[in-house]
Length: 129
Image (cartoon, rainbow, N blue to C red):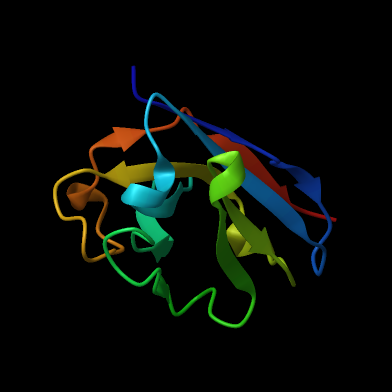
């Protein structure tokens, strides 16, 4: 059974850091593109970062303009885990963060939620003083 579980969210002050984890079970994350997304209240789900397959592709990454230079996505294939390191957090980063896997196109990672097939349950990130 394919399952993704996020963790690492919480309350942090502006300028602080958090590291989110996305652990996969039932499949090997290194074979698929993995994306991080977020959804604030009343807003649509948006792509934050993504990383392509390391087995089929080159593990390339992409970021939304709003997080470039502050967020870093990475893989630890031995732990079947993808991380999202978030630095210099701002109040507008407050949202529920989700990870997802793309099982259709193995060669390219995108920031479009419609391209992803399996989703975790989400973890809340709140940036507030």
